[in-house]
Amino acid sequence: MSYAMSGALQAAIYDALINDAAVDALIGGHVYDAVPTGAVPETYVSLGREQARDASDQTGDGALHDIEIMVTTTQPGFTGAKAVAAAISDVLQDADLTLSRGRLVFLKFLRAEARRIDANTGREIRMRFRARVDDA
Image (cartoon, rainbow, N blue to C red; front, side, top):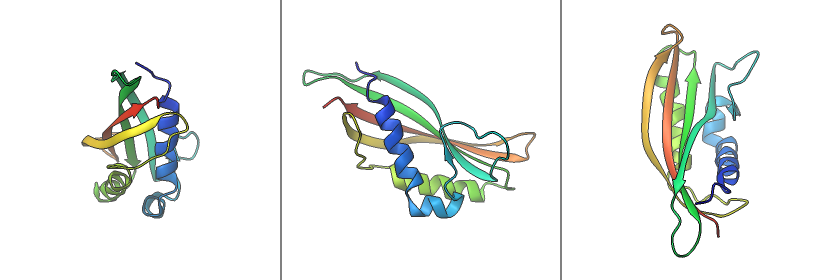
């Protein structure tokens, strides 16, 4: 197994989201690696948990990464958050991302969970994607 491509995968996903016109139109560039401090935008996207496991084979090292991406909003209802989540899914599903190390074999949507947060005043959608990377 190799966890060596994790940073390259995260950077490529971040770049894909921050540079997509549809995502930008909905959240104005508010994509973060961590929850922002201070004044928080009404709606933002953050990169969340990651789990990786070995996917090495006879041809070399590789890994499967389950990556969480969260859409958080203080808007009432789920309509706005779901629009952002749909745009993210459109960007990442079967994306052909270039990594600074290794090669992305595939990137697929796994599941999502929409829930109320902050005493029901906020909304959050947690999306989970699976990526297969090879250290090529």
